[in-house]
Length: 205
Length: 205
DNA sequence: TGACAAACGGAAACTATCTCCATATTCTGT
DNA sequence: ACAGAATATGGAGATAGTTTCCGTTTGTCA
Image (cartoon, rainbow over all chains, first blue to last red; front, side, top):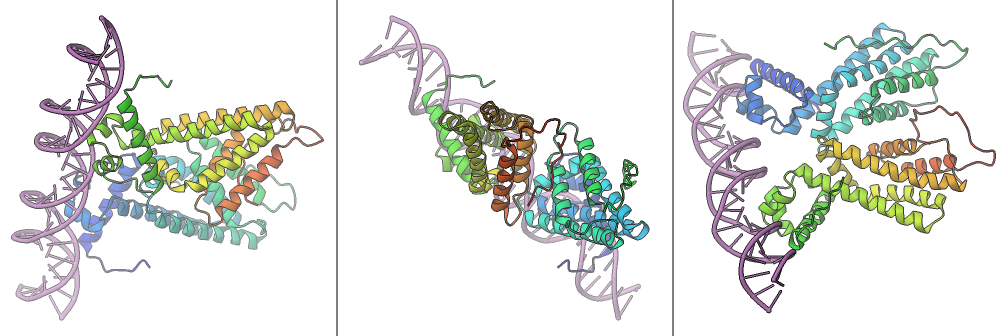
């Protein structure tokens, strides 16, 4: 459905500049910035902005999709370089770190896409597929139980995201992940290695 | 907190008309209706609308507070006419029914109040107090265990609200309530003391 | 390099928001 | 019951934000 269109070089460049600026601004929570002002900040004319993203929602959607793509890419990379179980753990912890580092972005996107939630649902599905892959690999390894689906993990992640307002959010979120990972681990013997290590994606500024 | 201001009769009337219309329109999901058009629909001038509710958010906030007040009133009424445990059960089931019947309203309010979430937090606190009362009465009756706070119930409700997109939402939500009520009911063997589980997730059957 | 299509920018047209005040309604004291 | 004070109203017009349109520029391909 994401039809590939040959995009002219300058168009591509502008598009990327707009997305980058949007990400930055959304992250700062200024989602109601004037549209023409936004174009100016991104260094393009309003016309260009409108050609690429006809509405505020379209812009949000594009940023969101980029976000999902980044996450999925990260997962693929982890899966290629780490043992399955570790890849899953690192990915989930990384998700929390990502949510933590980009609170404003998440809130802004959620607000802007509240109406057009089709794209949101689609992204969430994409993410679920990725988690499914990570888990399936770990199950194949025999390190993770096979009787719990990715849906459960998704619900937990969703719940974590929805509870952002809680004062001790980060710690609680990490707690949920720890519980889940422990619960998922196939326990042939009680080997509880220190799972506290905070493996972020190493992207945060 | 709710300072009583003597409001002139016509002002009161207009205010109520605006709120009623807002509730109706929000419920239908049209939260981006033009402001002047909205005034016309409610049968008042724009000036009047602006005097009562300076911003869209203020309007949403007022509707939200009304909603909370309705809910709390219902709880008080149940508490006065039913045995404590039954009052609690009826209230919780009623909440689900309410959420179900007014999906659009909930979504709209959530969207509009994403920024000004102070009122949201306050309303949620008010609701939590109400649930606390219901539970406390049931605990005094000896029908409900005393070692689990209202916070747990609130989290579950919150989780239910956040999962509205799930295809089988209503059934699953009812399931969660059933589980909770069963879990809350004091068993013949007595309370489970010193329980530590505060992270609940993946509550689906 | 020239020809053509694709993309650009930003002025201008358009649309929505909000303010202001002359007029209308309600309230209060006698 | 009524006059005067206080409060509220509506909507025209000012302000602010959005979107289109098109002459110009830039990139692509032969």
